[in-house]
Image (cartoon, rainbow, N blue to C red; front, side, top):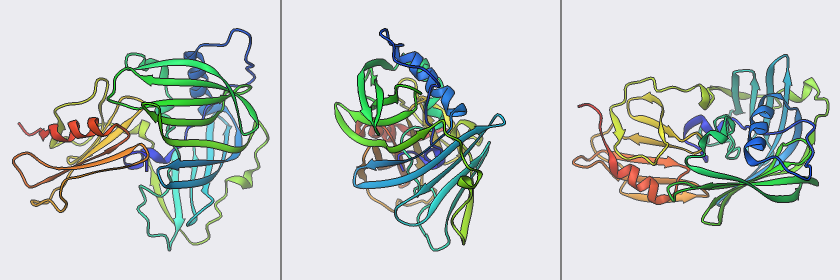
Amino acid sequence: MRRGAATLLLLAYACLPGVALASESPDASVWLAKMEKALREESYEGIFTYMRGPQFDTVKVVHEFKDNKEIERLASLNGPQREIIRNGNDVVFRRSRNDKSDVEQVMPLGPFTHAFNQNLSNYQSFYDFAVIGTDRVAGRPAVKLSITPKNDDRYGYRLWLDQKTGLLLQSHLVNHGRILEVFQFSRVDIGEPIKAGDFKSTIADAVEYRLAPMSSKVASAKPDWRAGWLPNGFRLVSSETPDKLLYSDGIATFSVFVDKGEVSKLGELTTHMGGTVVITRRLKGSAQQITVVGEVPVDTARKVADSVESALH
């Protein structure tokens, strides 16, 4: 999925209740703050598509804020039956018992995780934010925003927010004007009553996995490795094991894995799908293998991989 580990599995949407586009539009930071608020408080139901390279997914989403708690269900409409059901901080991924896909890659839900939406305007040191016009998406007037990196070491974004509510209707992940990933609602109802039955699972013989949102992760295990070079603003946000590190700048993320085996199983590899890059390298002076996976440009991932070194000194 576009995101290392479970960071991809929680979709965050954005909306602003009852705000119309006046003759003098709010600036980008105002719209982004409304996105973060709506992540917790807006109710909506719809169908969206997510395209990343050759991968195309259609997902039904139902989201409600009730009793100061988020309730959400996301169900894949193509391929094997898969769904995510969220009740407050309890997040469960369910799939058919016959589905043998990797649990960390089965529900690519777009680039907008909870971490992405929280306080985006705090990252003005690394990105420029701007309102760049109006448009129409899923039959609704929309405000168009740009998030442009100040350096070439990360990607940019284009966002389309519902003009009336602020809900995120469409997004593009871009690199020098080239579109790498697309998220878009094809149909959405905002602010309508949600039926309790809409949150019930429809998979009869399911296998369940409990997930933790990225925002709850902390650097826990003492890592055996570290990246000697990082793009400005990126920091270690999780080290669930000594050999698995997750870095983020608050918007983008990437993971570093070090093979515990003494001999690398793969040669050097560079590949990508949409905005997700995978690079494998041999650790300097060792046969161990380093893998960098995440939503950063190839040159950035390569520099990170080449800089990985032992932290045990």
